[in-house]
Image (cartoon, rainbow, N blue to C red; front, side, top):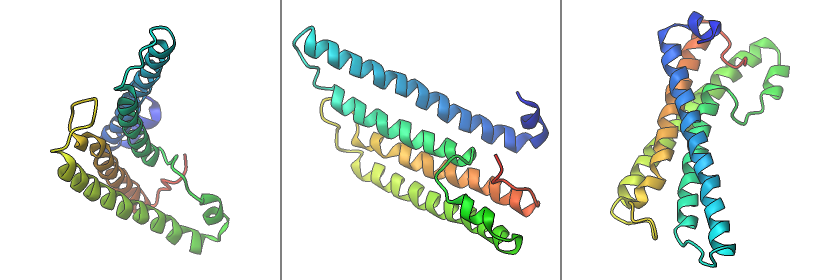
Length: 169
């Protein structure tokens, strides 16, 4: 554990651990994705028998890697933003824009969680072709990403309220 993590408190440590878990899971899935494509190439060119499940498995893994990485990006403040414009402003404009940015992520994350859950629920009874698992597994990472984005952004909002700058890396 780093010195910075120890100074931030228990809530920070738990949220940081969640973010790290997202990155570890996404990393393992990325390695799995590479192995799957390796099997595809081996099957196609060596065995002359292309595995049919590879495309669907790859699509599923890409969704999970993307959304878990996106949630970790919110925690680490590594998501896409136009902060250079905000940071060039005078403090009386810059500070409200920081609040607005965090509130915007909370709103978007909430919508993402809600719609991801709805999509998972509506597609759970269908199966992904070639994999034989519920189609809802494609939408679950969307709901997880949204929920974690809200959680992480609420912490950033509380930091702003305490006078800290959560936008600094």
